[in-house]
Amino acid sequence: MQIVQRLKTKTILLVEDETIIRENIASILKFFFKDVYTAIDGYDGLDKYEAFLPDIVMTDLKMPNMGGFELLEEIKKHSPNSYTMIVSAHTDTDLLVKAIHKGIDRYIIKPVTEDELFKAFEAFLKKVDAQLPQIVLLNESTKIDFDNSELIRNDEILHLNKKEINLLKLLSKDFNKTVSYEEIEHQVWGSKSMSLSAIRSVVRDLRKKLGSEYIVNISGLGYRLR
Image (cartoon, rainbow, N blue to C red; front, side):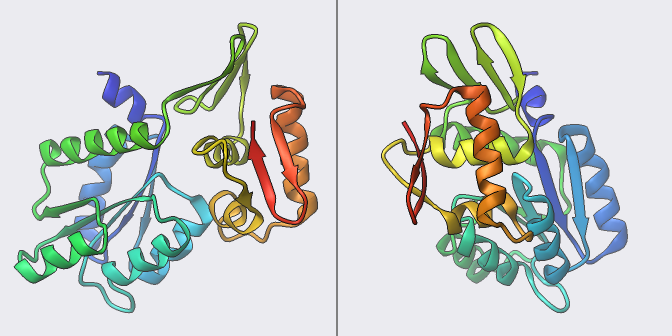
């Protein structure tokens, strides 16, 4: 049950050109996820990815205009740690090997079953936890709950909006790393252009919630967490 509860805080993008298949799979996904976004081909999928920044991308392989491999290549240029899945009727060994070499997390053969999807989503949560714990402690009285987009400070629960939680995810993956403005723009703003005043506004709001000492600006480069 905990797995289903955690998935209910996540979002997924389904890219499938066949209308009936897309609708059938989407109806299953809505049981698991907070939000399910759909797209009809790779170009539409890339637009939806940049607009919504979903936690998981699930795509068909052979589609008109832009196929699944091309779509995932574009996504991984800016989000190399994103969780990606291919759902395809093609069982060619060459395609399976190509998927492995390209770092695709899961390759599921159609028709899709709920059991296979559940195993893939369980693996997704394990990957998320390996990259970043669900709960990050900043000090004895302050912690971030990434699944629920909450900051708990002195037992007070503060909600974090999508930009705030995505920025904290980036910063929390490595306290010794300065996250560049470019990384922040791609993984927090997506398709929207990020101005310096916009990122400063998000950082200012976070500092009010966290305390001013945690997020440090590295002039001309970006931000880091300490």
